Length: 96
Image (cartoon, rainbow, N blue to C red; front, side, top):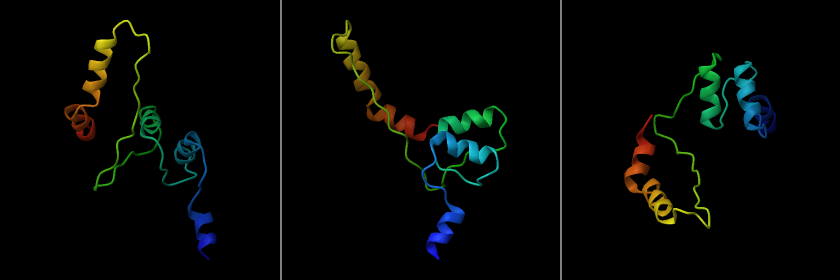
């Protein structure tokens, strides 16, 4: 019974773009995936809505790196320190 319900209500394994397309085309009611492409679809006129749980959500982690032979190594290190600072992380976590 559970397997039948899962196959009716869930589609697991779609690519991110497959999730957006399925929701925008009305094939799926809800899609869980990355935010940026969904917002682009919304801005392009898709009949969708981006929502966040009232309890909050996680911020998508991203990475930053310094090129090994950077001409501006000290400034590069300062920039990395800045973007991982508590102030910037708090801002990223509370800005909508």
